[in-house]
Image 1 (cartoon, rainbow, N blue to C red):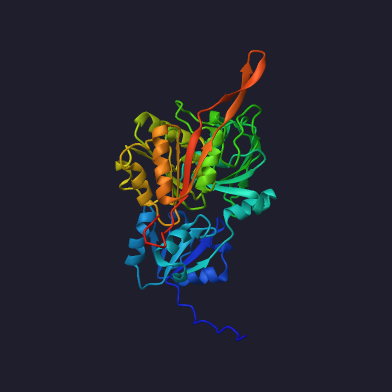
Image 2: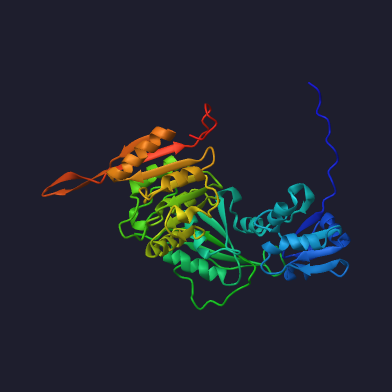
Length: 425
């Protein structure tokens, strides 16, 4: 076996990204100090730039607001110069490093990380990081924290500003986690570091003054007695949703999500959203899962927004309009669920055509007319037709009997190329 030949030497990085903590210049390594001292352009937030001494003589450029759209133009404006970008803590952990890598490619970056505030928090609390879930609220709604609430779970919540601790406490109370234990850690790693005393969300004083904007909220989740328990897998209790009867019921919903088989980063079209339960539970399977719900009724569309917010997936996109017309401008899906409107002319064909090879389509119906459409689609494209029947035990006089729910016909199919014709099945 021949030994591997060494590859070419790495190209000089176009941008150096330096992580800096609340301890400022004193906490930097020699390599980080050298990169900042030699840079011709220094880009960062005003707070970070103020941490640098005068010996860092490069042109100082503060990030504009909003930050992300400005990245390409700012890098282009200083192309050919030695650029150093300042980031809080570890640039590749919820930091600017991600945006820079997307613009320049990872090979064009030289990243010099610093311990993140999360690492400092875990060290102060004695919490093993592998057992902690990190939720950032920087530039994101507080409602996304709800998806991480499970009894006994430890959370580190990255604060957006001085108001974040109060928002976290209010959400814990509202979602039935008032007994959760909360601590606020500020300016971690710096000379003004402060770790507040422990309180429960229920005992948090409303009159407490805002603290430092650079904070992390540590939460040990405790569910209140009698609060609705929400599990980590599809099939949440029907009571978790606000609905008008248009709801894919719990057991059928669990079977439907199993057929859709969500994977991290994938996009779902939920057509005929109803109460949004399929899209909500798709997104709850992984923080990177995305979904678009299409619902023609504005009242129901607004209800879907509320359900998504309450159940921790405020990023669910709701499109109010009738399919298939409302599908025309949507990004290509990895999977499609059709929960209503199957008899609308062209709907099933439009959803099928939008799917890439390897995509999945699942459609549910309770009517004979739509069942006939699904049977025809199954003959053309393959897949599996199943009948889902659920019965619940109910009182019958002094005894107990079964009450049958309407059976649901489900078609589930993977889109694959037809090897005989080159056309999609």
